[in-house]
Length: 274
Image (cartoon, rainbow, N blue to C red):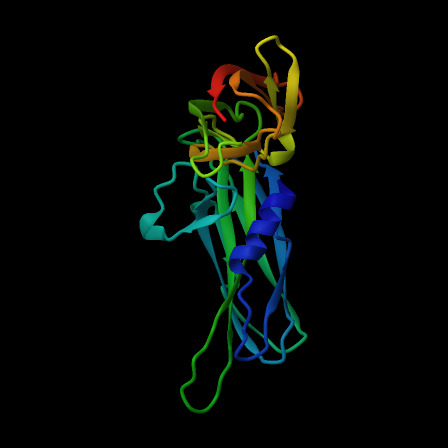
C-alpha cells in the first residue's frame, strides 16, 4: 500500500512552482494505523521549504477515495463517502510560514469515535498547500500541494471483500492477437486492501487442458465502497491457432492475522479467431 499510494500522492500533488523555482517536501506521506473506537492518536507532520522563496503554508483535512489506486480528494460540500474520516483529523496550527530551507511542524490528532456508522475503516488526507510570498505588482502564483494519507482501521470486525462482476473477454478489433480481459471490481467490505495483500494470476489453457500461457494480474490499493473497471491485455503467440481456449483467474486476498484469506477462482471458455 505504501508504495502505490505514495507514488500516487507524489504524482497528483507535487506541482512544481515553476515561476519561482520553489517547492515543499512533506513527511510522512502515508500513515497506516489501527485505531480502535474511542481512542486517540497524535503525531507530527514535517514540512520543508525546498525552494528559494519564502512560502505560506496552510494545512487542512479532506476525505478521499481511490477507485483506481490514485487518491481523489473530496471537498467538504461533495464529501458523501460513508468511510470518510475528514471529521476525525485535526491539524494545528492551520497556517505557518517557512523560509527557504526551513522545516516546520504541524501537529495532528486522530480521534476515532466510540460508535462508527457504518463500522469500518476511515480515510482522510492532511493536505498542505504552499503559496510563495510575493511582493510588488500582481503576478501569477502557482500553489504546491502535498498530502499525507491516513488509512485508519478500527481493528477486529473490519475486513476487505472483493466482488468481481461482468467479466468480459474479447479480441481487439485492431489486432486480433490482443485479447482484452475486463471486469468490474468492487471492494464491498468495510476496510481497505493493499496491493501487497492481493495476488492474482491468469492461466490460459487449450481444449485439452494444456497450459498455453500465464501472467500476473496488475493490482492496486482499494478502499471500501470503491469500484473500478479492471483491464488486462494478453497478446496471443503468433503461432497460436484459432480455437476455443479456457481463461482461468486465480485471485487471493490476504487479510490480517486471524482472518481467513479470500480466494476467487473463475474459469471461462473463449473462442479466438485469427
